Image (cartoon, rainbow, N blue to C red; front, side, top):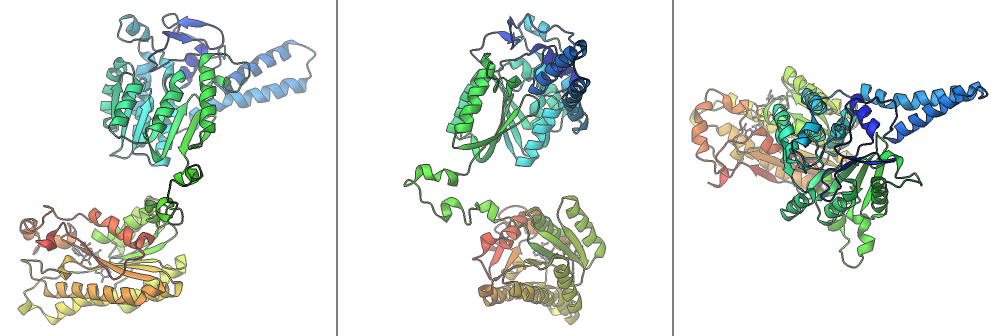
Length: 596
Ligand code: NAD
């Protein structure tokens, strides 16, 4: 929360019971008095802890008073006053420091904050535009907003549910952390707040990810459950008395997906949750909520003591709940995952070392990125040094361990050097993508031996040499995955272009793959190949081939050329342990073209 907001909020102990259909129309001074919403919120208040709000502010307030007493009373030892001052410095410096050091908010967030703080909420309420007098201090501030954004990134959430949007600062912060196709459903009781936030959402490139549902949050939850919706992250920041109802509903109706997280704001509620003499209803509601969650065997929770506390609650794995369901489940590898790992985890390539030949552009570049994203270290190999280096840099930028190697796969020395370099750098090689290839077109009666030899020396001889050099290392390791790039041209005769040597060389790649795949599998090395259809890469942008695109399209049931990204999942699958029973296979990805 921004310092000014913090000042105002702290000065008042305001709790806006958002989305509470049964709430009394009050904002409250939590310590002493209940005042009507229209009575609260004088516009100018000083922060100096007259009404501390969070546990840290309570501590600062008490230390300030203690120090004043100590200073006023002449007989207090100087040491005690100096210790009090040090404690005060530490406590009072914390929030401003977090504010200063946390990454700054985006422009739309800053604008939303300013708009919220300068809006005349009193007038809006008096004009009957809102059901309640809304205190602007309820805005999720800068530090909490960035914390939510970070949580979204860390949990790799794509679908978010927010219960209690207010003016949308939290929703927009989370939207900024979501991927492009991510989305947030934000529940807000007051329709006025949707109108208020929407123009700024529209200004942000992330605003389109937010859908605001106005009205009772519980009604919205019921709607979402009936529609079978699930969320990766749920943020609850609404009426405290209903926290437990929202939580129970979410858990019982599976609105939270298996690996999902629930974040709950204000879970330390001004320290009332653990102070024995606390009596105010919101504090007691939060205390009850925290207890229920801590006893719920379905979840684990921690409370992060940021500002007024943020609970992070995650479902424990189904496997650890199985003892309570003994007899009703089949507790095998299908249920618990192979070595306890789910199917997507089994496709990860963490700790594996991979190389991709022809990795400087096109399909090879897409393979290199896919393997790196899945966790492998990647050597980008290409005869074009600049291209290999450029892709290597892209991977490093993404946080992938990467090197670039210049090698011509048609040269035995280059191939051996490539494997030696990788082994000496990373200690082994687990995944070999032999992808470099060339395509020269000519009518068969005119095909020169030179063209034939050149094509074969890269496409088939080069692939064989790479398989052999990497295979020797893999056989010694007792583990390896080789993925060769063949082509649909190994199965059908693509037309009308004439490419005898290419087609024949790629058919050779498939037979090479089948032979090695069966010969090496009992020593832990699987060899498979991928046969793409026509892929939109520089290879087909040659002067000869470019005019043929329209003709090809009419031969493709999928109605379009393949993009390199269409092939990425296949290479990760074949590189991962999930495909360990697959060997000598030709995985055809051609939009159905070979079937027509
Ligand atoms: P591309 O021409 O876009 O990229 C090939 C890369 O390989 C280039 O960076 C090039 O410098 C490199 N290269 C070429 N010869 C090399 C050699 N001797 N040693 C090392 N590097 C070399 O090609 P692409 O479309 O990405 O194709 C990659 C593979 O996929 C090839 O084997 C190709 O036959 C196959 N394939 C492509 C298509 C398609 O439609 N593009 C379809 C099926 C199969």
